[in-house]
Image 1 (tube, rainbow, N blue to C red):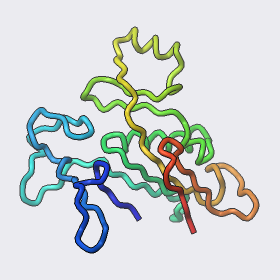
Image 2: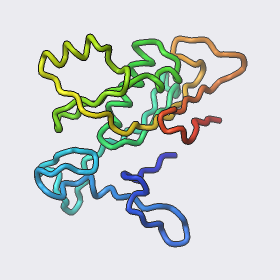
Image 3: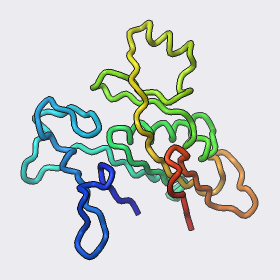
Amino acid sequence: MTYTLNDWFGARVAAAGTGVLLNNEMDDFTIKLGAANLYGLVQGESNRIAPGKRPLSSMSPTIVSRDGQPVLVLGTPGGSRIITVTALVLLNLIDYGMTVQEAVDAPRFHQQWQPEATNLEPFALSPDTRQILLGMGHRFGAPQPANHVAAILVGAPSLGGKPVGSNRYYGANDPRRNTGLAAGY
């Protein structure tokens, strides 16, 4: 199950008698032309509130399958950073052969065009690489609050790996927020 609030505590209102917090997804529409939303996205006329429209959204709950069977489920909150983090975790699993926990733990970066700065976690780039990019005109911003990735890999702890004992599900929980856990059954 996935549930989105958008900001911490969403609209800060719970549905009567349920305890379920309501979201503040209206922030994903353009409220004021040229002004950034909660996640720093500067939006235009095409994303204005209107009947029958859906807001710009980065929600990307992900299921990866092989031969019609699910092999990975992955999700993260984080507004504009969701797509970047999802892509980085998938690249770490598929291209770099990391285990699911290594892929979730790996350092991250994020660049969203506007504002024109790349946000880096510590150790995301070597000092040499950072200097080369600075010399090319790249700008780096302060690290942003981390996304919290949860993922479950089916069959083995890495895509090309072998099962460990009788385990069939390998969960990974992001240590960046130290909350929650990945569980599969």
